[in-house]
Length: 214
Image (cartoon, rainbow, N blue to C red; front, top):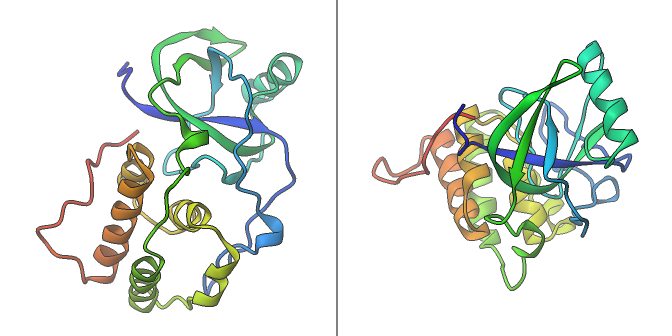
């Protein structure tokens, strides 16, 4: 198995949810907390493969656990490090150096976190909000979505870029590109290019990112 794939570490806690509707609205601030917890992350992690799903540090993903093997995984996680489910909050990206033997039917990996200091990436960084919102407006018009820029005022630059990346209907390979971005500035650049590409206004010569499937 390719050990260079990127995956996400998750924290089990926080009754947080996104509000999305057919007109596509940014999640309301009172339902979102983007703080990335400072905590010790375990070397060995249970994994729950989900195709086409992106969860960036600080964002939230609710899950419905029903398969016996994943119920086993939840029970084991709660008895040990409390790292994994029921509602997921992204903590830190990682690569894995090897896949471990199955435990009670579910997969596990040995994680390496050193490449991604996600909890400190936002220090001293700001995005070009005008550019991001203009690209979002173009994307919305192209897809018949109602975009309300005033909602963006509720969010910090980190929240804006990460929530757009997680919430918008990008292709899995495009989501993977956002996940693999080495810096927040690079993630912002990829996001803007994807929005413009989706709106049909991107420069054909622009490279949105390395597009590799997870």
